[in-house]
Length: 108
Image 1 (tube, rainbow, N blue to C red):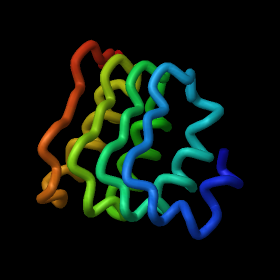
Image 2 (tube, rainbow, N blue to C red):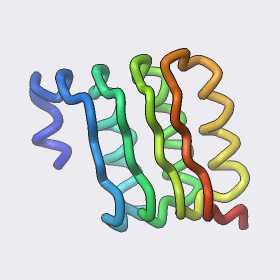
Image 3 (cartoon, rainbow, N blue to C red):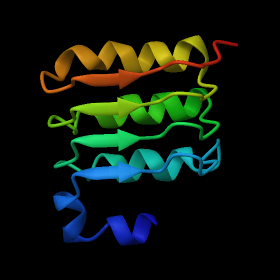
Image 4 (spheres, rainbow, N blue to C red):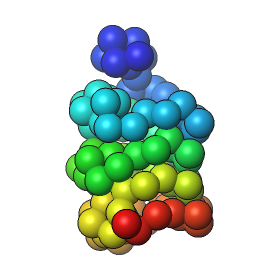
């Protein structure tokens, strides 16, 4: 997946739905590297992926590059308080963000 998104066409993707893919701790490093390249992204769905603290931090560090993001779905993950805090602190810098889902999240 990372090699596919590494090409020039990655910059034109507007929607990515990786829900229910069990990204988990192992995929967090790849996720961090890839999301920053998707600069045209307007919709990102990472719900139900067992994202942990590292996943939350990966998403947060990538959000700075996703200035067109209008919809972010992080429902049903296990990022904990620190992971969700990292993400939510970045959201104020996204004027296009209209939809943000966090229900069924685990703070432990």
